Image (cartoon, rainbow, N blue to C red; front, side):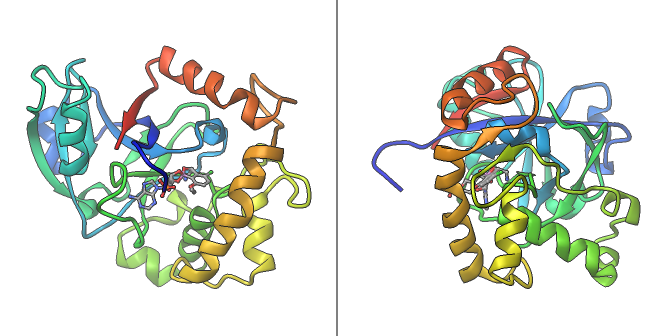
Amino acid sequence: EGVGPQEYTLIKMKLLPPYPAKLSKLANKPVYLVAATLRPETMYGQTNCWVRPDMKYAAVAVKSGEIFICTERSARNMSYQGFTEVDGKFEIVAHLVGQDLLGCALKAPLTQYDKIYALPMLTIKEDKGTGVVTSVPSDSPDDYAALVDLKKKQPFREKYGIKDEMVLPFEPVPIVEVPDFGKLSAVTVYEKLKIQSQNDREKLLEAKEMVYLKGFYDGVMIVGEFKGKKIQDIKKSLQKVLIDKNEAVIYYE
Ligand code: A2H
């Protein structure tokens, strides 16, 4: 990581009713799981959302009257970035753990899937972003590995109460073409490096390095409003499209 703050796009993934028990008093309010991403242009390929079952999350009231679900650490950062009424102050309306959110249905921007689900990822870090990660298995090796783990291990789904229909119908969507890696970069690299699971940390780090920079410099959009354009030329414009539709916000840490 370089000097100075990192800019993330927070993707607002709208929680669909019925809300989990711990959020039942928020039934008439708009609640979002907010996922920090460096790749807003890949949101066409979202297949699910990741939360870590054992990690603590907070439901936080923000200025707009909306509720954001994220880590308390990220809520504190947000409170210094104009997200809340009073600078440095934030109101927690409910405390949760990831397990409480598993299996929740969400409406996410740009994806072709009407409804996607919150699923378990065990490698989410507490000290990065919001602790909520949006899953784009076509272009993120970590996301693809975690999705394959759930698809091929029925006991893993069962352990977390994940129903088959929350996982099995969701496939990586071709959205970006990268020379040498094709239209599903993450799948190509996962297979090339013979990655076995989301816990294959060294190989996943290598996979991430292989696809990330190349995707940015040589990737071309093959879907959506910026189809045919290079990623580096449209990343900012796509971020703006999401922000203008109130489907994303900028967040720094
Ligand atoms: B990225 P950096 Cl398609 N723990 O978004 C683990 N991973 C986290 C996280 C956390 N607490 N918070 C965010 N992330 C992920 C999309 C994506 C991402 C694609 C390809 C690569 C990629 C879809 N997932 O990231 O350490 C989020 O996943 C690889 C760099 O700040 C976020 O962007 O560089 C990225 O890691 C931020 O990681």
